[in-house]
Length: 299
Ligand code: GLP
Image (cartoon, rainbow, N blue to C red; front, side, top):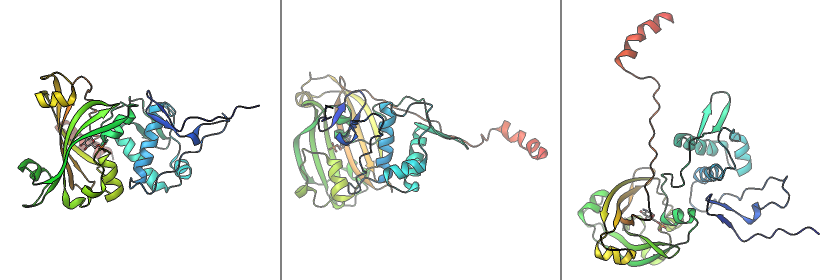
């Protein structure tokens, strides 16, 4: 008798940052697993969810460098969305350099290594889960207050506008990793104090309750030494090296939503950046300019 495949509720492979839903565990190897439907009520744009799925498939090695990406039409049919939505996701991945298009030949997976901590706007919870750990938080304070000048300017607040301030120790598998102090305009998410459990994911709450998607982030990273208080909270020796982050996150339209100061353990984190040179149609160097008349003459 064939064994019935009863997997655990979800399999999280720490190496590949890829969750296999039970519905995707195959009992018949020749059958393609059906993708889990996109979550249309999550508030997360569909193109963003598709982008994430394709990234997962590339990271897990399911889609390999040099291989063609399934066509826009195939992806659209498989995920039950319009081709325009898929085009948006594919365009964003092209910009990241993860895939590339060849005129008339299609779109291919690039050989550029995809870092685990690829610079995306991720929440602490998402980043921790992607590493195979369980996120949790110790709430130090959660209140409404007047912003200090730096926060007021960063969030573009008028006189008298107030902010939520959320101060937490963030943990991975119960190990303190960092301390975050976030400020958000009260006006953007008025009921936050009543509805939000501050030990859970802030970004999830913003997305689900307020439809707020943080799409862009400016972040400054400095190196410092843990103060006695930070060291106590992070359970490290005073004066240990730490990263000091100052982050301002924005909606797609440029509205600032969050100003955060964080202290992260230097022994647990590394900073990974990918820098890209913008493509230029034609370099406008003096040399290029001097060859132009000749080109015109040929035409
Ligand atoms: C990261 C960011 C913070 C943000 C936090 C939200 O750590 N650096 O600016 O507040 O994520 O995380 P979560 O949604 O898990 O609360």
